[in-house]
Amino acid sequence: MKLLTATTTQTIYLTLKEQTPSNAVNWFLEFESVSTNVKHVCVGNEQISNDRYTSFGIDTNDNAPSDGNVNITQEGYYILRVYWRIAESSPNPDRLIETKLVNFVKPSPVEPTIVTDSNNEQVIYYEA
Image 1: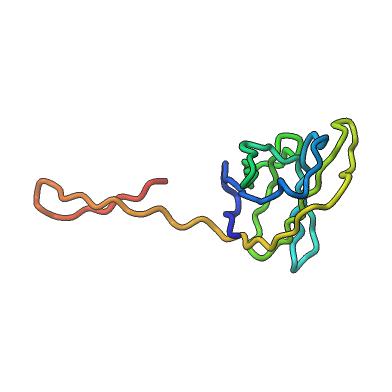
Image 2 (image 1 turned 120 degrees about the vertical axis):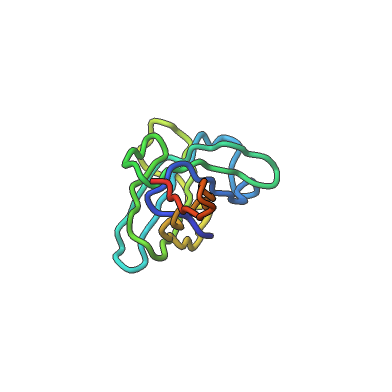
């Protein structure tokens, strides 16, 4: 799985249905850097959950774990661990149900816009 560093709203798709008890109330996501062992944790903001997959929205440019956001600016491989929790008041996860390897990469540079001006010359614009 590939995600972008320091980027707003991305979607993660996981197959969790078979492993999740019916009384699970929410998710806990942990990203651990393979190179530094630094951990970033957040609540999983479930967007869609059906028989095929569960999707989560995540921002990687904001350190707001209770909103499902983490601040990951370093490129590289991270281990994603997904836990479920039975009680919302519980600060700790109840059970590990999924582990994935995630490659965080920097966002691609913005594609330039090429416009032909009134002198029939091409001008290149880059969005900031």
